[in-house]
Length: 102
Image (cartoon, rainbow, N blue to C red; front, side):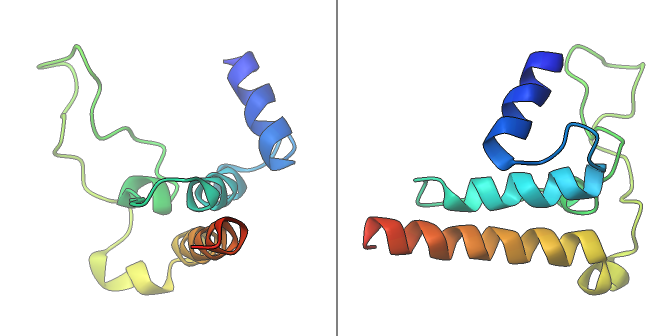
């Protein structure tokens, strides 16, 4: 939705026209900087997959929970979006710890 995109852009400084990969990285930096003690990242998000692994309310119309990743498991460690998002997540965690004294 437009309002959600506008809020995300304002929060991250990311242009509304940014790529999905840039949005994934920005979102993980924000997640890392949050106050949660535990933060997780989904592989589908980390490889910027456009396919949703689950569509609530569907039973036969969508292959819920059975979509393959668009990247082979062996190639995950070299995936540029995954690497950038995890780096941003770590940076966010380190910034959150520095600001909270934790």
